[in-house]
Length: 291
Length: 334
Image (cartoon, rainbow over all chains, first blue to last red; front, side, top):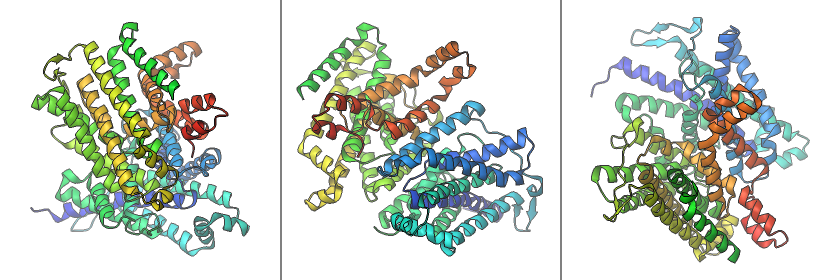
């Protein structure tokens, strides 16, 4: 079987692009789960919200892409703060499962609302002028926008890693994950920290959504299938480590891209197959700690 | 106990009489299939404490196999149902083996991911008909003698099958095996320390639940004559969770009530919306039929926040107030 080098490289790049989304989403899920013990099913819906809000701002108010890259995550983050304060707060003492069920309900609610306004078809979304076109590298054509997505998400992921692993705020956060009651006894406002963490994780999803909009078709259901793949990514990586979540996300994106080249039929299932293999060999996940 | 036997007897009589009281048999059969599906699911979530997010795969997977067997191989309906049930059991065994390796929230995520894999396979495989699904599955003759093409005959056969399966679930729950499952749900380390092989019990419960979901799926294909991607889509798993949660986790009658409410809601919500639009003159209500998910999402949120015992859980708590013991066993919140 012969595969041309440019085709291979372009699928590899597309894989990296998808991998960046996986990385940002699984990172947010891991941070939220660490502190809240809630698996945020609504992550996909909030990712979609980031994209659709940007589409709305661009089409109705002619706000430009760069503004929305900051504004959309802020709006969705604030929305997340509201969700945490009004709803999630009441279920921390219950079984973890209720967190999943509550956020599942929220997902249906949010997606249903957007669907009743926009239907299910894709909305046209333009690539910003500065990023349209491509670099010609000689051996391949590198679309500027895809390169930008990979770079931007890597920067955000590494910044998040730095924030959590190397700063004082991050230290509080990690301590809160280990033992919230003790941290509270030291005078840290844990409930506030929980609220902000949820807001931040969700804002990360919205940021990924804004980035994804020109690559994936914008539609109210765009987050659905993605979130299930991200769950598999989280199972594969284990939620113990921030860097682990980033690497697993990127790695699986690349594997998926390569599968598209060599065996396209399996490209939608390959992540799940890898999950099965990892569960058989290393049940706690690649970066997970055995409890 | 006597009271509940009386209750189920009355329900069964009412269901026997339903076609003569104006109920539309096909709708009633759809209801029965989902009631069985939800009861099978409840065996796992309500009595073993395992949240599977992959039951769509058992419902939909066996619907395809049963449909294919009856349509292409031309097997009799009872063989189709057996094959469908076996498919559910087999899938359940595979899912269970993998998912039991992780606990709690991971269990849910793994089953969801595996079911999504089944969805993609169903989307791409030849025998499922892809986007079109499997159409025009014949009902055939039960045991080669009883012609099922009449809705009324089909209805009574379906009612008998569902009633028998439900009786099996009740028997399972009250058996020593069921007691061990409850023990695992309440306190897994304790069950382990008492010497029970917890993983094997969980796996067996998972397989039984998946097999009965498979029976529900293949019966649904037999009744409606088609199997589509909707059944294998993750939203089916979501909807069976909703039925169980709304009806009452860990109550026997809850899933029956929950299934009835959810199926009725999904089928009739358009009419309800039109009615509301007429009453309130808010145009938006007319589109309610297309946005069932908004309503189901809302019910989910309300159930989790304020109504965790579900409809039947509340009813049972109301009747056994002061008795305490039974209410505790039936309560959903743990």
